[in-house]
Amino acid sequence: MSGAVDPSVTSRRQCLTRLADEARSRGLQCTLTGPDGALLHVANPASGHSTMVFAMSLSPDNWSYLWSGGGSASATDPAQAAESLAASLGR
Image (cartoon, rainbow, N blue to C red; front, top):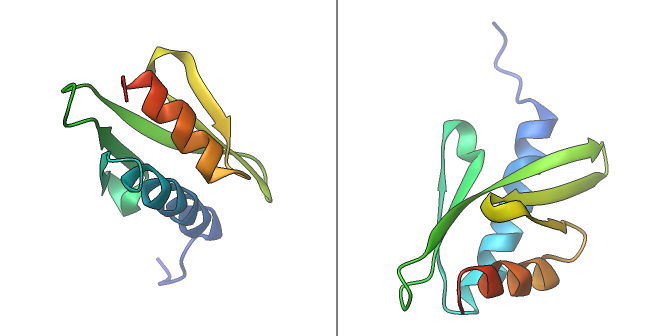
């Protein structure tokens, strides 16, 4: 097995990190988790609600965020995605 890093893993982590930064600025708590930081746990400390967010590649340069309850948003606009995510968590 080589030591090469799968570019999709790096891109997924970058997408989730951008969303985490935006979500934190809205008062949400965020933790990258899972293998290679493949999932983002997001919690609203005020309501106690939380969800897991997955970044899915639709093509090499087109990613989407998906979370429980049917939530989804384009990764091209992490700020808008964080707004939608915060609303779904009662923020």
